[in-house]
Image 1 (tube, rainbow, N blue to C red):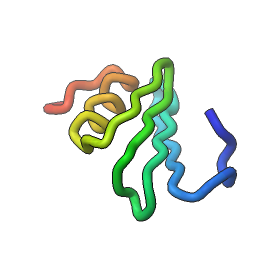
Image 2 (cartoon, one colour):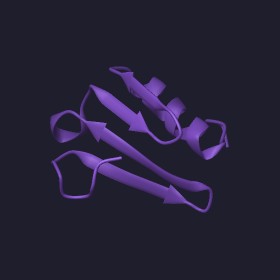
Image 3 (cartoon, rainbow, N blue to C red):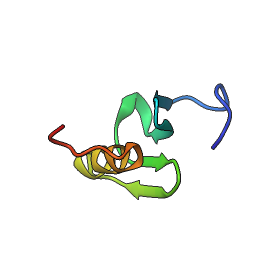
Image 4 (cartoon, one colour):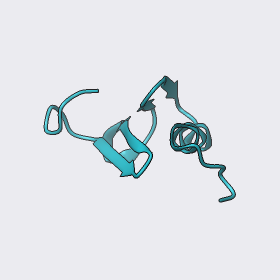
Length: 62
């Protein structure tokens, strides 16, 4: 994972089960890179959400 402040449009999400880094295009738009235990590159917001949920061990309907 990169360090906070390295670039714009980098978000760090954390809960008790860990931390996930999400990089996005300008203004939070695609493309998205989700990094945790694995890395997902996608232009689909639903796929980015699914990757974040998977990193946290959550289901999208939780």
